[in-house]
Image (cartoon, rainbow over all chains, first blue to last red; front, side, top):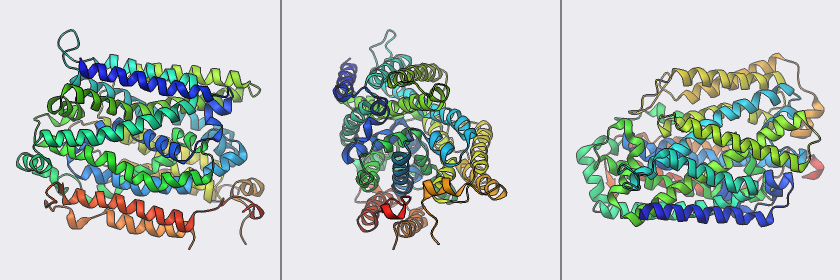
Length: 494
Length: 71
């Protein structure tokens, strides 16, 4: 009951923080969707980082480390230190310039204008929605998986809070402050949540280490019981390890990250994010991976139930008070992504569907439509979360792989003058087709879940298909209008 | 050196260091608390921050797509 009380108190404080930003809400569409481009470097850093740290980073990483060992950190976290800042610098900053210059709010608007292709405006939004849905699912599922073991005894049959109720509550809290405050509320809430989960990650790590007799004793227990977790030779092949680097490209095409980029006050607002992101990722992933590895020496949980590892470790080895604090921190990480993801879909619907049908819609109407679609998305995602049982980590990787497939498109948008509209459309179709075919062919094995295609991650083939289609079709079709290219890429250098 | 060249050179070096074949099956525990394969990658993350700091300080790009007169 104590743990539950702490979680409820945290949610109330979060709601208050999110709603307090409402005093700065200007009532305009530009403010609800883009915070009037007023976000500074610290808030941008905490927003971007908070948005990228999800159930995938906490529940998923401990689960994967329980299955695969220390290599989990290198698969995602250390690659993120390279690839994410690369995307911020070479995609985020230029897109900020382009977005401000041309007034774009969504990716579909930008690509459709750049390539003079109405087809892109129709094709891209549904694909982005489909790819974001797994990301939303892992957040809601992850919250339920963590809260249930920590609140054992509060429910009717001695169980913890059921996942369906946890999912309902967090959806309701996020929906409330996003509905009222838009992206500024999400940014403030993210800053609060990021601070909370960074502090809590450190506390969790120290508490669990002490409970297990210290890090050395915890590792000794793992070495005795599951020594394969302390190396990579028995669980991950080098080519597999290398190909995971492509998954991080997805940051270049996340619609919610795109929207946060556009809120930046200036291009130099990105500098702190470029430098600090690798350190913040390490601050979260290192303790989580270690907890998963330590769990290998403590638990007899079957590998296909690895999603429960973090919740069980917290429930078994901490006090009810700290269990509540730790769970609140995990909820912070999960919800800091949900708000931006819900909001980006509302933005996408308003600007890529409603405004095409009603170009003269007022600010009030745009905000109303954005809010309505956010409610619909939350309801659909919640319903799907009651049905899905896939590994949190693997669902996340599938989501990221789809977005990574779209990165050749954004790179061509910003850097390749010869890219054409048909080439861009072919790239989107190749991404969608390859992703769907590979996703459906994944047996979804939950024991380790590593689905490789010819020894590498499926993302490799998705990116390859997308890039090949983009280049081949662009070169086979008429060159684009020089005036349009110049508007986006500047004058050609002689 | 332009931002792009510097960042791409850094990317290549970091990608090579990321594939730490030399610690692949090494079970050594460093400082008594970290398997060496994990310690290497934690240090790698710190190195990434240092590299990006250098790129930001030395070669932050101006708007690459602005008209020449506006740069």
